[in-house]
Image 1 (tube, rainbow, N blue to C red):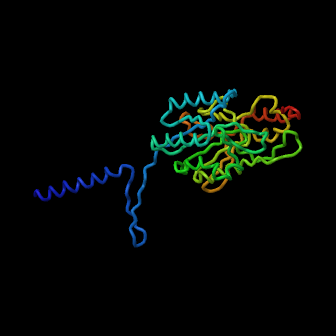
Image 2 (tube, rainbow, N blue to C red):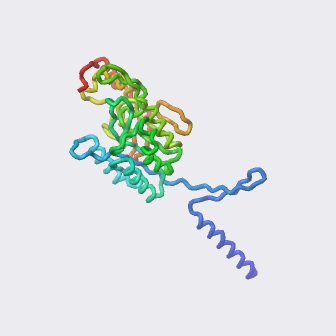
Image 3 (tube, helix red, strand yellow):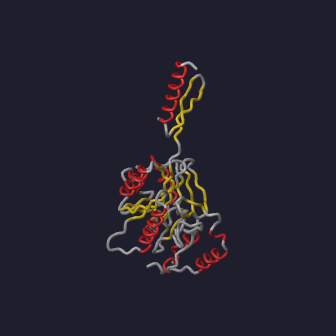
Amino acid sequence: MKPTIIIIIIITLAVVTSAANGQPLHNIVTAKTGDHQVTVSHTNKKQKLNFFVISKRKKGKLDIATRFNILRTKIQGFFRGKRLTSIVARDANDAARKIRKRLNQQDGRIGTIWFDSHGMYKKGYSLFQIGKDEFSYKTLKDSLHDDALEQLTGYADDETNVVIGSCYGGATYHRVSIDYKDTTRMNGDSLMISLGKIFDQANIYASESWVMTKPGLFRKKAAVAGFPGRKLFRDICYKPAWENVSKWNRYDARNKSFTKVNPVTLNHNGSLVLSNKSYLSKKAAAKDIAKNLSRLEPGLYK
């Protein structure tokens, strides 16, 4: 083989190798559209990271459930640090900053993000909190209020799941007021739609009733299914919650559609998992719900 040909081959191979090494995250494809050629860049999928967001405990206030969730998610995150991160936040901006930092460190995307929060039935509308910030269909009308969540939208895609982990977060019924004088609609569907306008490619999940984290998340069972045992929850004002125990809704923000789904849980990596069966498919569970509904009475909520 002539030296000139050998040199040409070597140069050609060097150029091809350089081009390949210079594009580690992309595959370049040339496609024809009509009479034109279009170069399309396909980005490889980034790693999916999961987040469990908990509100920082207020000083001087004992909140056993929150402290337990902080402890167990920190432990779970320690062993699953590459996929699951536990975020303890004083407010929404603090949460967004910590989440973005983690995503940028690992060049990741949001897989599942669970906003762990207490619901407030007494207020008469669905909500969740991130630290001192409250999010509801009312507050999400304020562009300044949802700015923190807007910071995360660039890390979400059509495989992202956003979970409202508060009781009554997806409630669509009318709740009888605590003094039994009137009713008010919870508007959990409006809250989910408002979140869907921010995370416009994601699936939003929320419960019509209680979100029970016992016997625990990160298991195969429907860990969030069930009901509380305290006496005050047998007040007649909680009748709609009892009628909707363990019923969950999913809002597809892309298609703007709602679907009833089985209770959700998280696997050991913090990814969302839908239960195979409805909680009420268990005869014992259905019997317990019916029994509690028959025993509701006024004057227990104090």
